[in-house]
Amino acid sequence: MNILAASYSFPPDASPRASQVSRVLAELPADVAVVCADNLEGTPDPTVAPGIDERLAEIIRISHGRPLLSRRLDYAGYRLKISWAHAPDPQRPWADKARDHILERLSRGTLNPDVLITFGAPMSGHLIGPPVKKYARIPWIAHFSDPWADNPYRRDNPATAFINRRLERRVVELADAVVFTSPETIDLVMKKYPKELRRKARFLPHCFDPAAYPPGDPPDGEYVMRMLGGLYTLRTPEPFYKAVERAAASDPAALAGVRFEFYGYIETRLKNLIDKYPVAKRAISFHGNVSYAESLRLMKTAHCLLAIDAPARFSVFFPSKIVDYLGSGRHIFAITPPGACERVTRELGGTVAAPSDDEAVYRALLGILRDRPASSATPDCGSAYLCSNVAAETMSLLSSVVAEKLS
Image 1 (cartoon, helix red, strand yellow):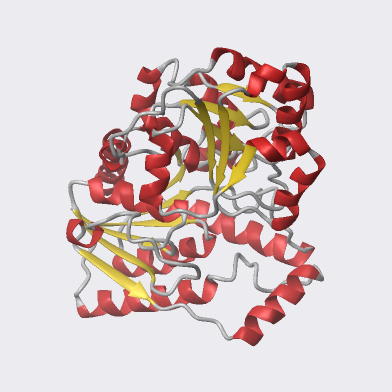
Image 2: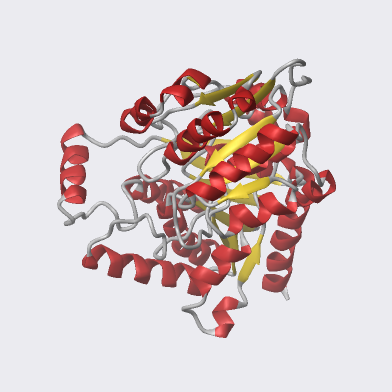
């Protein structure tokens, strides 16, 4: 089978989306050509998917650059809630260029796909689907990571909200299948559609590759809890700061031999909140960004891995970082609201507390400091998230939509 994939994010981009997309595509028993962005913002990370070029049939990198003035005008419009660049996102010019490149290659016969799969976010990538499907007369799968029009973190004005609802509906109507990374996201996004469209929804989770992790064990004689990943906007570490401070006050011996380490970008205002908690400030260290390979090593050599989400009544988001944590085999402490991340963490035998419940975070931390777990309590549950298994499910879906098209 010849598969054509379109994903704005792709290695050496350091984003979680890039690693997840490349991980699945590289495992597919097919000839895979990928159209992606060439000049992403941020520092490339060659450790995200080493050797990916040799594992795929072709990687077509389409440049994406926007003048500084355009970016500033977009930002000003976003802040004033008159944004025109978020229909669906600022990457739409890239999607237009990628679409034109694909159609030109199809017309010359230098691309001959049997099926198209588009990945979001950014959701602009899905706008490549309708014209390519029509021209090439091939089935098309739209793979969502996050919700689109229903994303609670979008700040659309009424006009862009209307446009995004229309764009999402067009994608759902025209795609042969729509894929989501959690059942909770399916329920949120598809509840507004009729049953015939809801039947297109499929669940394929994020995955991990056990071969990517280096050997390593946590140190003896101390207990190491690490968080790897960014904290920004509403994803605040303050509930954890409070819990550390309170744990030290209630049981001075609780923090003996314990190290709390944060790796990754943290907004300055969130990092500085620790000044309110002097004991926590002495116990917690901040180390900045590391490469993807180094992050996996740090996971393997910790006892417990910390995840922090934004407060919410319910969250459909299933962070790919949780799957990276899962692959390390370490205990997971997720400060997350009810929803997808909570469900998965509980299935794996991890510890969960809602970020809006200071008492629950404190009690959960005390339990970890008392018992000092170092591994997943239910490791067998992780097999559903193995890259080989998720790739096999993806290939089965691709094969089924191609077979249905030919029948």
